[in-house]
Length: 165
Image (cartoon, rainbow, N blue to C red):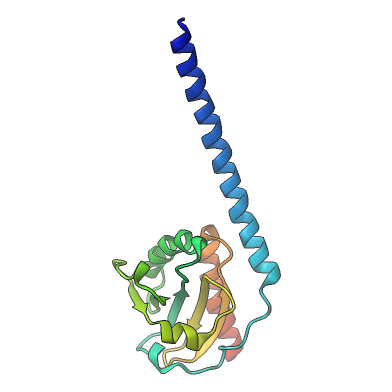
């Protein structure tokens, strides 16, 4: 084996090890973000019970509020768009102050900085369950893209429990 071949094999091996290490670090970072979101998020009820006419519609709404400055929001956006087909009778929408996620197929995306400011959420990404009349029934921070389906189901059940249904 020539020195050039050995150096090439060694460099590819090093790149593979670095790629695996980076993947592990990113996984740990996501887990840490989820833990911090759960620990630092105060029980939030600022918008719960508020009626927001812009969010009213024919069916209840699950709203994902995203912030363009949030890198975690990108990881949450795609799994959320898949959930829309799994919950018939419920609208799924994305709200952001900028057009970063505006061209999403199969789901309505709202670009409304005034509405984002009006909701005044303490975290991003956030999930809101909104009644058909536009009343915010419940809200919570997104803890993990992998558990988004569980969070949506829990959020909807929490809202039903608070309504007394």
